[in-house]
Image (cartoon, rainbow, N blue to C red; front, side, top):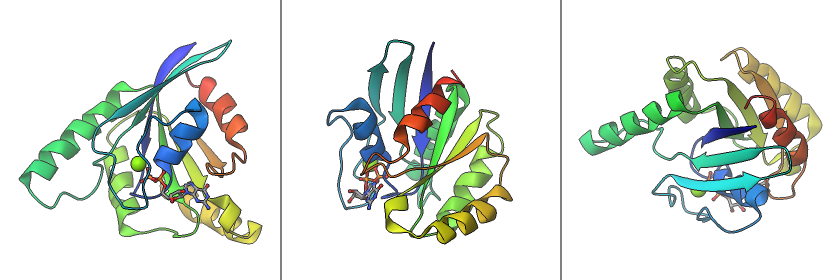
Length: 166
Ligand code: GDP
Ligand code: MG
């Protein structure tokens, strides 16, 4: 099995951390500052049963100027061509207008989308349940997967679920 997986989400949700965790080397650029990932950074993961191309897709956010608008269309078109989209959110911050904008973009894309709830090491299990409840009504997600990219919590299970969609 092999396929392309695009990772989207607001700045700082943990996209680069997740890619690094999966690939096991520093490919994506990590920073506390938002939007340091300027290009589509691709990581290739080869296991005994699958090959995965991970794409860190920046630029899915409300454009502030014309160039931003163009870049966002490029990013949105990328989403049509991949096998699976991981929409990553930050369990600590909760739902925001950035998410609303991304979900609107996803509606015209027709690629399966996982909701990946990251940073669960930072929250109480009850909080996780209410986040799941909240997001379930916003989009028809193929899977909803809570993880901690930093601590590697549940990331093996996410990888198994990804492989089922390739
Ligand atoms: P990106 O902008 O979406 O690529 O986010 P980054 O991967 O650069 O992560 C932003 C910040 O969140 C960094 O300081 C990471 O160490 C931190 N972070 C990422 N994943 C987790 C996690 O699972 N738990 C916690 N506590 N922090 C995380
Ligand atoms: Mg990044």
